[in-house]
Image 1 (cartoon, rainbow, N blue to C red):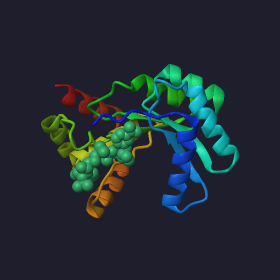
Image 2 (image 1 turned 60 degrees about the horizontal axis):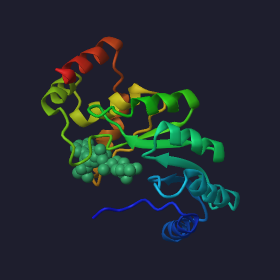
Image 3 (image 1 turned 90 degrees about the vertical axis):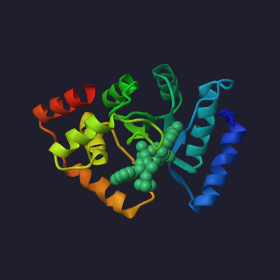
Amino acid sequence: MVVRALGRPDYIYQQVELSLRNLKVEALDLWQLHDVDANVPIEETLGAAARLQEQGKIKDIGLSNVTLEQIERARKVVEIVSVQHMFNIAHRQQQPIVEYCETHNLAFLPYFPLGGAWLPMPDEALARAAARHNVTSVQLCIAWLLQYSPAILPIPGTSSIKHLEENMQAAELVLTPEEWTAVERDIAA
Ligand SMILES: NC(=O)c1ccc[n+]([C@@H]2O[C@H](COP(=O)([O-])OP(=O)(O)OC[C@H]3O[C@@H](n4cnc5c(N)ncnc54)[C@H](OP(=O)(O)O)[C@@H]3O)[C@@H](O)[C@H]2O)c1
């Protein structure tokens, strides 16, 4: 099934009301535009978000799956605090957007930070590099993201408390420049 992004203002108002009701809150701390509707100018979609912000129904506004050009257009309409895109140790196509976020003081939320359930990661090389640091491959992926850019805020998905605890511990691993280079060499091999 193909789900098309819907960016008409009426749809945005309706969805925010539904989120407020489902979450039982008076305001959404961070509302993110999930995808840009190819048939609605981003200015119009974000104009609706700006009105919801004025009404106090959303606090901060972010974007997802956008181009650099769309980020710039969006920032002329509202203040943008975050951008979400696929990014992880094995998939770095959005590196220019990470750099843009760093330069403009926006948070970059990498989705599929661990590669997601279905993306192939360079398993053997990653496991070798992780073993050298006495951590799991997943912990190395998280530590790598945290160290890649100060703009990056990884939110790994998990349904397990044990994994959640392991993932939190990953923040303790800080690679020296030499160790970083060795990890990069290993996973590129
Ligand atoms: N904006 C967008 O277009 C977009 C698209 C996709 C996803 N997202 C968001 O991005 C976030 C992350 O995405 P995601 O959860 O799909 O991908 P992910 O975080 O890369 O991977 C989650 C998978 O990793 C496993 N995992 C987590 N911690 C682990 C550990 N310590 N050891 C072993 N396995 C572990 C999880 O299984 P267990 O449950 O067994 O731990 C789950 O199968 C979510 O908040 C999601 O909503 C946004």
